[in-house]
Amino acid sequence: MECTVSWTGGLDTRSGMGFVAETGSGHMVMMDGAPDAAKPENGGRNLAPRPMELLLSGLGGCAAYDVVLILKRGRHQVEGCSVAIEAERADTDPKVFTRIHMQFTIRGKGIPASAAERAVAMSHDKYCSASQMLGKTATITTGLTLDDNS
Image (cartoon, rainbow, N blue to C red; front, top):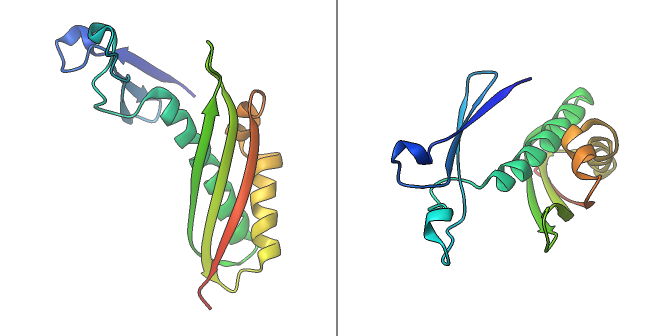
């Protein structure tokens, strides 16, 4: 796996702290820093997600992917899966994530609560690489809302 991240601030762009990432699979992702009121030249312009927001997005995508795959392999009729993530960071550098809560909402017909709970637990405990990495510095908790459309 590979990725190249390049600063766009030197290209006379609108933000002095903008970056573009090109992934090994050929996709582009823009990033920008938060505005800095004290030193505007050192801040971004809030034109794209911040890098740490993308890290949380990756966690959510990794975990939701696992949950859907586990449920589909169990032949459950998954119609939707989302995960709302709330996180806290350390006050001092490096400002790592210290607490993360992932609230899953799974929609489908006749999915047993035990199967949905098992899928979330398996993702968190075994399969989600992002969860395993971030769990080295953060306490990660999960919750589940099951929307049964039957």
